[in-house]
Image: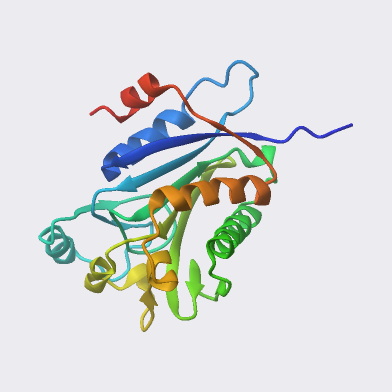
Length: 233
C-alpha cells in the first residue's frame, strides 16, 4: 500500500509585526480539522519588524536590558519557545512549521534534527556548502550563525521555528549575545555569497527543500480573507 504523504499549506504572511506572527500561529493551530478530521499542517513564511525575543530561559536579561533594547527601535517579547535571546527583523526569513508530528514521526528530537537538516540543505541549494550544526543550537558557517532555531511542542504539535538571515542588517545583533553564545558571531546568505539574497529567493528554495527533507507535499494557502482576519488586531 502506498503511503500518503502529509500535506503542508504554505502561508506567505509577508512583513508583519511579531505579535501578529504569534496571533497567526495561534489562529491556524486552533482551526477545525475539517474535512478529514486530521490536523492541518502549515508552514508560515514571514518577515518581522525589528524585535528581540527571549525564550523560556531568560538567562542574563533584566528589565533594564529590555528597556535598553526597546530604545533602539525594536519590540521586545518573552515567548514559550526554546532558546535564549535573538533578533528578528527585515531581511530575515522567519519560518514557523505548524506540524502534527504523528503525521511524520512522533519525536521532537527527530523534528529538530530534521529541521536542522532542512536548513543545511537549503544553504547548499543557495551555494553555501559548509553550513553545519555544532554543539550550540542553530546552523553555523564556521563560527558564525546563519540561522537560529527555537521551537515549541505541545501534544506533538509544533510552533515557532527558525530565523534565517538572508539580507539582514547584522548590526542589530551587536546589542545582544545571540542565543546566549559568547565569542561567536552571526552571518547571512548575502554576507556569505557576496550578493544580495532576498527573502523571496530564499523562500522558494526553502519550501522545495522542506518538501524533500520532511517527505511531504506542499500547497499554497490562498484564503487571503481568512489570513487578514487572523492578522487583524
